Length: 196
Image 1: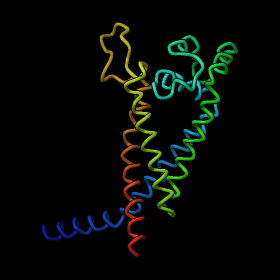
Image 2 (image 1 turned 120 degrees about the vertical axis):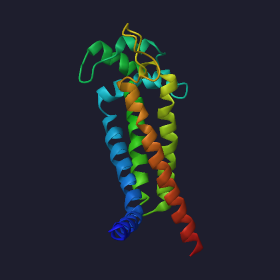
Image 3 (image 1 turned 90 degrees about the vertical axis):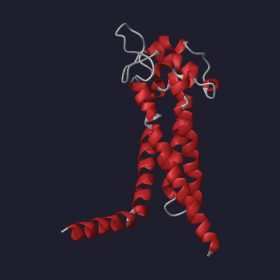
Image 4 (image 1 turned 60 degrees about the horizontal axis):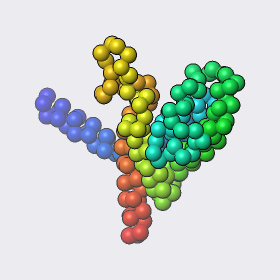
C-alpha cells in the first residue's frame, strides 16, 4: 500500500513538472488580463480621479500634475460621483490626460508580456516593463499617506494596517513575482535559440 501511494505521489509530481510551461503561460495571461483591464479603465474619469493621491504624492510622478499635493484632498470624488467644479479642477490638474497616457502604457505592457508566448524577446521587454512598473506602484506604500489606516480614534491605525488603497497596492507583490518568472522564462528561451 505504501509503495503504491509513493508511486502515485511521484507520478503526480511528474504531471506537475510537465505543466511548468502551462503555468508560466498562465502567468502571462493573468498579467495581460490585469493590465489590459486596469489600463483600459484609465480612460474612465472615476479611475483617473482615484489614482490622484498616488501620483500627487509620488516624487517620481507628481510633476505630471499641475497642482501640488495635498490640494487634491479638497477635490476627491467617490467612485461614480460627478461634481462639475471638482471635474474642472481635475481637468486643470491634468488628471485625465495623465491617466490616458498611463493607461496606454499599462495596456501596452500587458500585450507585450502576452506576446512573449510566441516571441520571447518581445515578452522580455514587456515583463521588464511590468517589473519596473510594479516597483513604482509598490513605492506608493512609502509615499502615499492614504494607504495606511488614519488615526481616527479607534486605536487601530498606521503600519501594518492597510486601507483599501493600500490593499490595492500590495497585490503588486504577486504581479512582480509573476513578471520575474516570465522574464526568466523569456531569457532562457532566447539563450536556447541562440545555441541552436
